[in-house]
Length: 422
Image 1: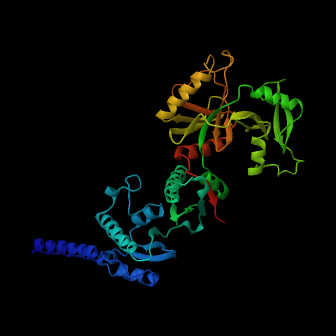
Image 2: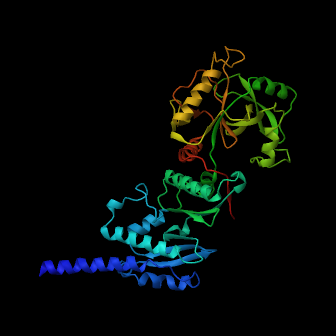
Image 3: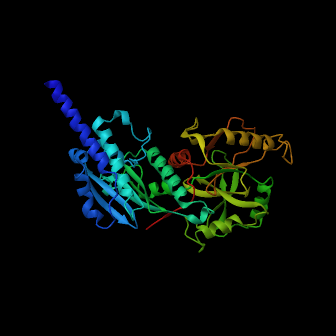
């Protein structure tokens, strides 16, 4: 008798699952009235109803439908809140083996349910997420800058940007977030508030392209800068400042600093026009004037270099990135290039380090510019060749800047610039 009852129970469950599978084959008639009928459709599915699943339409615009899972399994809702696409789950995003059998069956039923909805005439895409505690969190809408794509599909750039943003959020230590496509060219991001990352800092980390490139500095850059300084010729918005070198009593160096009397811009920002003016300021053909930021005695100064416009190496991925304080207690970002770029860097540094084949004076080394998004981050002197692909950025960054650089570079560059939608 007991065995018979168990058998009947299993048969009943199998019938319920078969009913849900059959039920989710044919599409709805149209998108019209979807909000009113969506929970009715869920309730008509015996298995989903048994699991207490509640789904509501949060948004429907031009065929893009966003659903909220308002009740049901806490594990599934947490995964949805973390931005997991329930129709394409990877082992990195969620450990299916750790879920209960009911949760796994619920996911399968929801996958069929979403597939059915997407067959509805007028529906382009359906996204399922979870109502969570993000209502009081940080919210951003980013738009793909299609002008940068040079004909490449916007949808592909959107998918890659979502992946990069998600990696950056995870690297920030934020566990509750949503990173979702919004139409064809926008990305909707919600992250929980943290004490460490405020609205402005989080926005900068998420929307920064973070494209790492290596360039050679002009062999006569220092000489050309000295000649300009001797005539008091500096880029618009800047003035000359002679500063005593830190830890080098009696030794001075000339830097640029923002000119507080200038009407070009305010004293802290550099917009596109000012960047262009600086970049072309007395630059020889094929070179760009870039400024490396230094903070000395709590004041910001800039050291100019004429840098080759065309990069020698473009880094689309890194093997690793991390930050720490060195033995002088100075912040340092350590990068390990991937195998292909490691070979390129070795070849480049062999040619331009001391006794390099392409140095005008074999006894003198050249400077290598490390550039991220057109900002000069470092310009180390190539004393020796670098065969192992290890690059250190040190000396001119704060611990906060080192942390942010690591987060951005570790996740890889965005495929294009992102515009923040007000």
